[in-house]
Amino acid sequence: MTRRIAILGLILAPLLGAASPPIATYAMSSDSMRPNLEKGDLVGADMLEGMCGKTRPQPGDVVVYRPKDKAQPYLGRVVAGPGQTLRMRRGRLVIDGRTVPAARVAEAPNGSGAVVQETLGNGRSYFTLTSGEEALFDEIAPVRLGPQDWYILGDNRDDASDSRIWGPFENKDICAVATVILQAKDKKRVGAKP
Image (cartoon, rainbow, N blue to C red; front, side, top):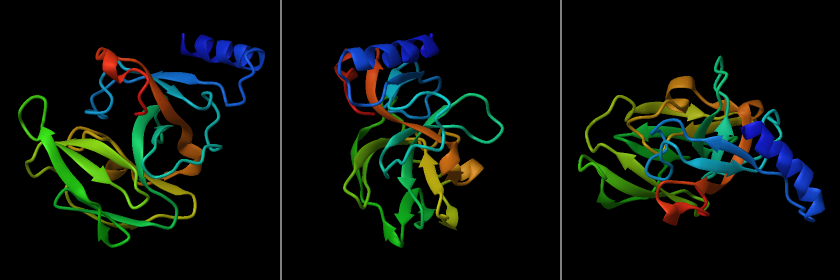
């Protein structure tokens, strides 16, 4: 179904005078991006499947990427890029020696933990979900990213497989930037940028 929608976009885009790339769709299959994306959400991305390596994301973007030895694409948020140094200290992101500002904005939906707004050095803000308890990956030693490396995290920090497990991802593993929520149970989120 996803491929048919993408192919339809390729056919219709020139007919409708669209100058932007066609939109491919990806379904969120886990809770790793809560609170911004929920399991079952349908997300539109700016490139077609198979275009990995041609995307140039910015820190703060939600990207479609392929972990090594995994056939299924994943969605995650780029928090640092080429040449940057990143670490986690007591659950807080530290990029290039500066702790990323984080403000607790609400209780977690299930009552255990908090929704936190992080703001990266480029001004991009987004919400994360944390249990509020010490978690396995709250402490990550400093990682210096190479010229083609990206550090990707799930927004649900205590329930995501991401760069903390697999390490940085090379540009060839980044397939698309998610641009819009196309379908969600909460209709107020439809049309929003993830």
